[in-house]
Length: 266
Ligand SMILES: [Zn+2]
Ligand SMILES: [Zn+2]
Image (cartoon, rainbow, N blue to C red; front, side):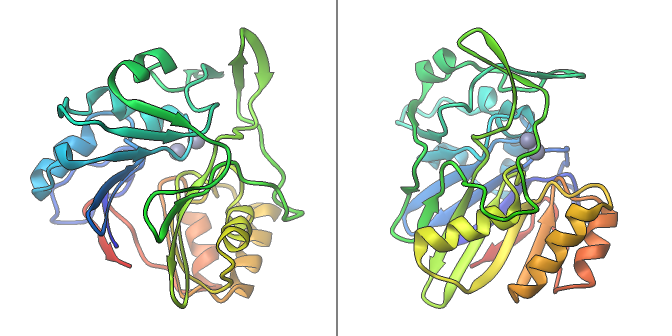
């Protein structure tokens, strides 16, 4: 499997791709071409073009969750003439707000259905033989309770938004699993535990993605300690991980920098 970072907050020196505080990964696995999230704007398209990646070949768009820094780019996705399947949790396109305004997907469910083959799931879905989209993540790790952000409108009613749609991908290899997260609102440890349960494989070869670790608090320290105990071979924290959090994590395990344009052969 080959993963290319099309959008991340970070860019590398001397590589003139665009960055934005958002996430989009392009995944090539066997004959499949998959987007994991679409970033906030059309930045992923502009970066892909510069990298020589033809996104008209994409057959599946899998969403980590509905926040606009992950779904905002969908409106710019090129009309390909082919069927593009969207894999998402049923909450993904619900309207969401916080103190800053609208933070949900700019396209609503109807608009998405007009252009794409939308399929909603809560249970895991196998995209290829070895690549799974995990669906709703159960909370099993005691220090990783759900942290609500803003409100969600469900059937016209305002609810505290626990972001139940937040999920991740897991790639199964013979000797273990590789986890690919969006924002990890569900908690990266909960995500890893669920990926282990679903695949039946314990060894974590690597983790790439947003971990939603920003403040230096007890949750960050507990997460770093838990991750260290899993003996993860390589951690690639990006998107919603602050420098302070990266420093804490790097003291506990091997950590590598992520930026737009990075490619990983997994
Ligand atoms: Zn988010
Ligand atoms: Zn995010």
